[in-house]
Length: 256
Image (cartoon, rainbow, N blue to C red):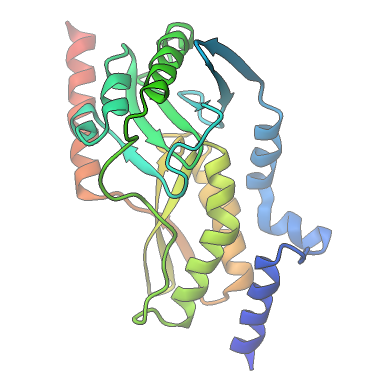
């Protein structure tokens, strides 16, 4: 009976007609909702380059900036290039990494998020060069990327009821919101009451990522799925290696 009621509730969520009472919404979204409100107030600026107008939008991460070309980038899903070595599959990402101060490149359905190396790097020059590179690329008609993208968290036959519900909530309520802030959330597993998620794009290294994870995502999952005790962020082994290499390189540059 409880399972049937919960699936019916998720059905209402997908139709976007369901609304929580005000008190419950505040409890679920907490600080996360406030970040969403703030993101809608961020200033958008347009740069007219050739025939394409590129807009930029701030994100909750001061080191990340969204670039909106006004046309689909991936269309669906996301793709992350954490280092220049990972950008071999995408001509555009390779060109963007040539801009001084770029640490990572992230593709969304209709946007590109660039993350700079540190706070000392100014956005002014990066914006100018990046808008030129992006406009030139889209005018060329080249393929945006090759290789696998982070698509929706497809439910499989091996998923039990709880995992299926977690994936459903992530894809219908959480991931679209995080993508509007220039990032994404990838489901990595559920074990002993703990949901394991990977934050990418503007979420990587964001000062508010812990708030997003705990006060936003965890509260929402726990509200609909009592079996969820905790949400934790995980990294792939390659991400940990890349982060270590980048930190060592950054230290050498500072010492030189």
